[in-house]
Image (cartoon, rainbow, N blue to C red):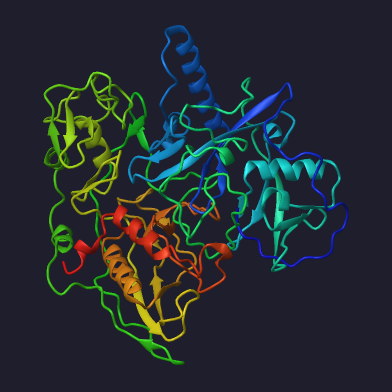
Length: 552
């Protein structure tokens, strides 16, 4: 949830929670809500139509299993429910959402609520973020708030749900009980969630994600994407709302598409991959001068322009590699396909033709050809890999959809801009033995290129310049050098949909976390955070930016 810091007032009306907090319903009517967990530990409900599709697939799989004795469906491609979610697959055994183009994994869970609850009625409660947009509470909080509202509470304390806020229904404000900072809230009507006959949590044999099972289970879905010292894993009751100036890299939110790039469309098992034009890699060549020294700030000029040609410069000057050549470079074609193994991209059996054979043609790659990536040894239809590559930047690199191993040098879609770096002696909380590095990113509005979601359309650049902070110690300087590489490779920002305002065609963070505040880490964007440097190094490595890149 986001951090509403708040000013408040004394309690008016009952301060105790409603008679019962939301949980598994025992009523005759119930609805199912599927949620994914963002990088701050908050649970974000999928839209009602997506939840309906997930429920239908599982129900059909269960009916088929009863007839044939087969097990529960293992993967659900979300593109069937919403073409914009085509890169996303839910892995049911591990209760994990997997993004095929970046390899990002997030925990998912299924909750069942009474049919007469907020979820069953399509009622969503939202808080106003710093950019003026509206962010929804997770569904159990929505149900809790609606129950209190329906029973004429004037004010309700969210403490029983683990949040340090109270909500005033008369003034429609949320107040942080510690800081007394206030935010507006609103009640909105949306589509109801799907009715279900299964009022028990979905048990998969690997672990259950329900409220009752999590505290007693060590086998639930723990993903690799917990950041900002989030020690409370899925279903944590102490996560915080994000108060603004967000450094969240996820481009998703409730009611908004969690995907910044053009949708994959056209496969038989997943929507079709639409071919894009070749990538136009235009980026400024240097950082420009560092910030001028003032008020005790020691400014450094750290140009990003590389003094000698590198693989990236050569790639910018060269004609993009033919897609078929890239696929064949990194995949070794197998003589026989594994009989019972699925292709993770199209969800068809590897022993069957590629699910993209109707929409992605190649004169050199057969629809039934199966290839194995040379390093990680994961296998896919070669035509599926061709379709995935053709839908991306076409920069000569591939990323394994299964393990995220990068082949070649990955570049992104960051618009033109400037990165400035300076240092000053003030210490960050948790790093009292050193000064501070300040990074300032400048990006202006412009026109989208062929690598962006809507080529030729304008994009906005809200909140720039953006200020970010690192400790000026050995590890902080190492992170800085790698961030400079990521900037040159256009990996820090992209054009997509804001997860705080819902605005599309705007510049957003892209999978690499930054600290945008020096302190006040209740938001997750400041210090102290003893794990941040290690976490961001892991995120950079996931983008192919490692120490091996330095000096190139």
